[in-house]
Image (cartoon, rainbow, N blue to C red; front, side, top):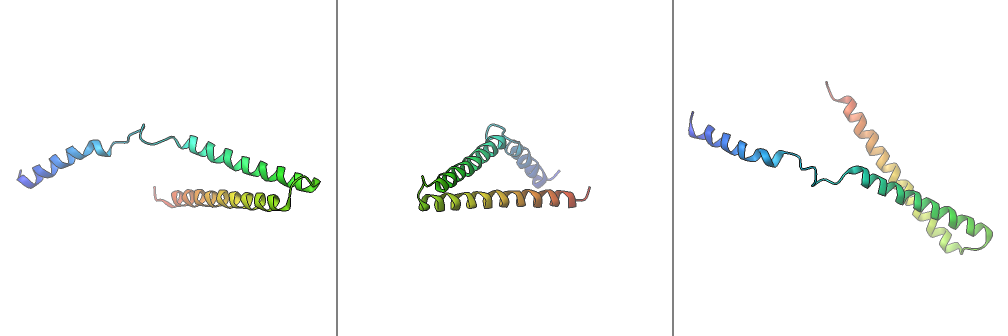
Length: 97
């Protein structure tokens, strides 16, 4: 066995702990997804409330336009996330087995 292969084996063995997953270092995606979903539904509920108040004359038009713009941005973000998830799923389906 030459010195280079021994050195490579030692470096590989030393790097193995760095490649192991650290479960406590990565936050669970479920919490992030739940937070995102709650914020999305809250934005839509706020826009609906503002729209209902504007129809009865209790809200000014500026608040209605702002609420509609926020809800439009939230829907666009959700659609973009959905598109990325579908695209990733299609990529997984195309992988050879």
